Image 1 (cartoon, rainbow, N blue to C red):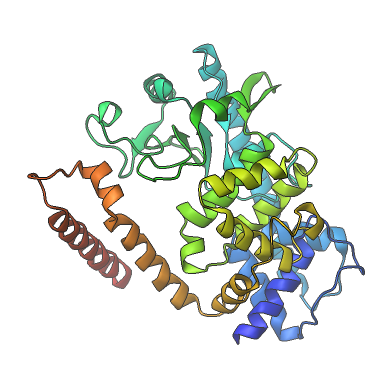
Image 2 (image 1 turned 60 degrees about the vertical axis):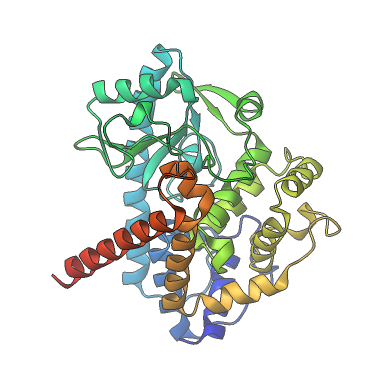
Length: 382
């Protein structure tokens, strides 16, 4: 399927998924019947199957999809609803125990949608795990509380003495419990400590947060500005999307619905000034252009004088989506570039003059990456 056809599919898919979609009023491309198959497959692969099902149910567009495909989308939606209900129950249990310790965590990313009406349906948002933010001095209590509840740590963030380590990442190790549908990930920061421009100052972040008392528990959520900023930052910087010109399908959909939900609470002037300060304004303008061109965000929400359109990024991202191997290759190079950056190496390995030279550390990282690539290749072939 050509890249221009891919763009038509994306525009039409987001036309349906848009929070301000009005049947018969929004401009939409004309899709050939054979283009519907890659459209619904793309949505499912991006964890947007339940969202597509919800849109088809609410808007009732004419589609050539047969009953088997519509049944599959309905099944995915039903199963995700069951999973989200289980994840919510699991989250309530954990936060209840943390509240007993005097800790009121902050829900972030997809976990907010379990408790707040971000989406019109609780089945729409797919999530791999539950993310929440805690304050740095709470990390030991939170970790020990989760262990008492039967959670076990794993992954590269778990190593002997990690709680006392000088190098501590954004989050505790991923915590799993047998029989659960999702893992728990407690974050101590929204941004890695090695980055020069951190848009999230911890004290201001907590002071501006909303405190909620629902379902017998107390928890925080980010302010409207911080919610939108973190959604952008996570997608475009932590996931490398801006650097490689990627179009993050699920993240962009989440960004659009957050903006729709918090549209009356945003301080656009303050957001503009903040993005300028941390030198992320152009990246935000590019991301916003992507959402606007795909009919996900109403243009009037952001003044064009301060948020001008960046059409080149839109054209690059939508055309590039037709070449998935290129996007994967660019992601690998971007991740390698980040791992090799002097700022991250100095933070992670504490390189100093007279100790481990920077070039030697980079060779060590490259060797580890090659070993991992070979191991992954063998596992795939096996």
